[in-house]
Amino acid sequence: MKRIIILILIVFSASAVRAQVNSDEALAVQYFQTGEFDKAAVIYEKLFNRTKNAGYYDPYFTCLLKTKKYDEAEELAKKLLKANPGNYTYAVDVGRVYQEKGEQEKAVEWYNKLIRDLPANEFAIKDLAITFYRAEGYDFSVKALLNGRKLINDENAFSFDLLSLYRYRKDKPMLIQEYLVLLNTNPEILPQAQNVLASILEDKADYDLLKTALLRRLQKDPQNVSYTEFLTWQYIQQKEFDMALRQTLALDRRLKEDGSRVFDLSRLLLSNRAYDQAVEALNYLVAKGEAGKYYIPAKVDLLNTKFRQLTANKFSQSDLLALEKDYMSQLSEFGRVSTMSNSIRQLANLQAFYLQKPAEAAQELAKLIALPGSSPVILAQAKLELGDIYILTGEVWEAALLYGQVEKQFSNDTYGQEAKFRNAKLSYFQGDYVWSKAQLDVLKSSTTQLIANDALNLSLLISDNLQKETDTAALKKYSYADLLIFKNQPEKALSLLDSLNILYPGNSLADDILMAKSRVYLKGNDIDKAVVQLQEIIDKHASDLWGDDALFTLADLYENKLSQPSKALELYQKIITDFPGSLYVIEARKRFRLLRGDKLG
Image (tube, rainbow, N blue to C red; front, side, top):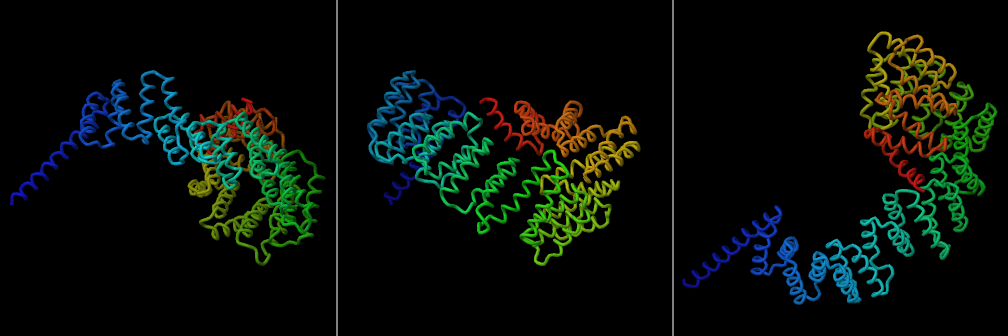
């Protein structure tokens, strides 16, 4: 019985002690959080001495530093270090005391001694580096890892730790060098290196650092594929497409490849409107011969690229006819089969909208739709484009029928949403604004951002111009002018647009007219006139419907057509600051960063 009573007393006593510790700890935490470090220090000292719990050391040591009790802090850290010689937390804390006391040279010497005394042990090296990192001694963390490499005689050791440190410190030169060291033995990390550097490198000067480092490495190791691929990527980021193509062609020849990397680059060049380089890449693939893997895709893309290149610049009727002849020859060579659907559709577009041959174009698409074995996607694309041609020829019911078929078949897909938008625009062309707006309002929540944005713009255009009878009358003329633009009849469209302000003075379509005229001029490659229209929108109607569209279009012209990067930079900046919710913000920010590099360089 006596033993039981003693046991109960011991249990209750331990519980009371634990309760007191918990109470003291809660009070210490409260003092620490409110900045009353002197009061917190008293309690933490008691807790640490009573329990010897290492968890109380850090807040106690911090309190001593905060209250400038440096001698006590130094004595505490050194005492614990003596008892635990392998514990780098206490070792680094001694140096922290020196720093807080303003004894920088003494702190540096202490830290360097810790690094010099490191054993050739990977765990110990990383432990010291991590401890430096936690104490915000990033330079010494790096130094410990680099010295550790020498100790264990492995230049690739701790690469990922160093990469994390360099990235955190935004040490671009060292980050680049470390990736190049690692790539030499781990080529699979190239995509990671590209992604990280794309987020860190900001301007031309930064990318030049990468280029210089890569060229030096390639001088020593010209056969290194990873370095060559990295250099090509660098050229692409800086839009030095000639150099990117040169590297890619050289690599394809050296490795005796099938042309896959050249074909991928050709697609990228086309998307960046680097037409000359895209044509050169595709001609290289065609020259590999009919047995080549990319012979047919390259020939198809070659005509597509030439079409894009031709229509993006001034062209003559003879240019268009020559291109039509090339398409016909290509289809004769490979046949009018579903795998040639892109060429058939491009030919139809050329005939309908540029050569005034809508009947021939419709026939090409009708044959494509009738081909056995065509995929639903090919059929949807052909039907949408045939519907456009029916609008061109005035067969609006046929157009609506085709759009409706695609919308029904792809009700939950991008093609279905595109078909619904085209049907809504057809109603707009016909002056049925109420029905058109109802369909557009549904599309404003489309999962495809571009369709949603176009639907929103057209819906607002309609609602803004149905307030008064004169506005509605002006809108009917305007929508017909829009139809003429669609039909590629620029002179008639411009004449009608110019007449609107005369027929309906004070109408609410001022910015819409300017934007429509800019589209006409751009389609005809009359850049100077397009600039005038866009600038007037920015000057007089920046807060209206087309403000961000005008800014982005004008910035793109200054960047890619007029070679005035400083003006483009200014306009991209304006989009970012004045239109944060715009569809163009992400692309504007990307281009701004690149152009800022051109400016700084």
